[in-house]
Length: 272
Image 1 (cartoon, rainbow, N blue to C red):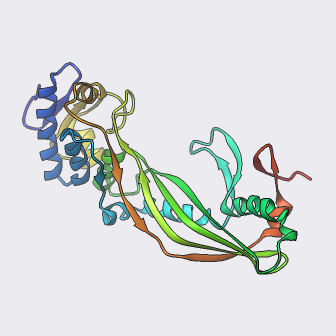
Image 2: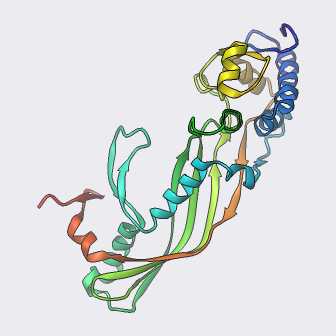
Image 3: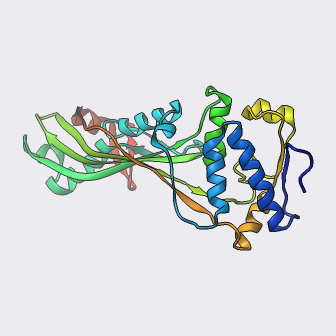
């Protein structure tokens, strides 16, 4: 059911053929109005291949929130932060590559004090950050990201070398730095990529939220799940990898040992 030139409906009660036809009409309108990447993602879903979709690095990294996520992951190779969940609901101890290094030093040397100056350890480590685009971005630019991913996970991997340089300090060097995204283009009840389940935007609201003009939408998760269930469309993974630069910094391990201790498999602040 497609009412008017710019009103788009994707409803679970429709046939798969109607959903596909209306989706492709919406894709054309989205591209015309500048939501290129989200339109390409929906198009890839409808192409029913299930192959991964490569994301343009320049576009992805053009968002301030992506740059902030990159920096947060890098900082975690050289510092310690509270291990709270993204929503802050639970606490899992303190985390950071310096603490990972201490675990390995304790295992290999029996403690930091027993490690000789000049000795080093090497290992691979990684950190992940959820990327959500803030309202500070241009609304159409933010909408293109959000309609493509919802939110995405940025993963930063690196080879780590930790070298003892004196009785208190180590140097931490990271190399072979690689960034990648972890996300699926999928449709689950209550997690529609547009905002919430069964989103219905009139022309005024969709222009306010996305910058799209003279368009109204009524999208349901159940419509897209019908396409998947009837094998008319396939969910897929996004693909993006890019390299980062090598970095190094000196860390005072003695201060870390004075502040933190391992309890029950997690690093905690000392209370004594």
